[in-house]
Image (cartoon, rainbow, N blue to C red):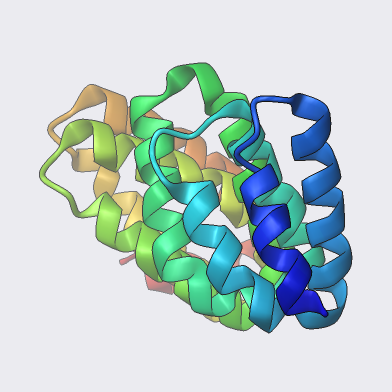
Length: 197
């Protein structure tokens, strides 16, 4: 029965009528809570196709809240799309940041490994704007990090960005480090000093 309903809901996501899109998203959330492995491969490509719309950017975060760890196999497509969105669509920055935060909060330790791996790739780009967007997302997503190995990895990604040739990337690195350190309890922060060198 889900296979019969899914195509209609996916088509309704592209409707010009906001009420129709909203109902479709609500229906997809219900199906995701039971059968995310069927829905995600169909819905994620529709939501991340550039350019993001306000609806698709919000829907991505909403879907992440329901899908949780089922989202892991799609992170290698979602994260580069978010980086492009942050880089190219400043008018949607707040919504994309919120979606990134929702994704980070819903995927757990294994997901953080994939998420930050994808962000590290973009942080190594030759394009200043892409590095800036990646570092911005690292800062946003690091709020939910509590695993030592992930914190070390993020430090090793953020700190070299302080020497980036681009001032805008340096500024984002300062902000990202500030966000990361907010997730680290003050009594254990000194434990990370050896990893900085």
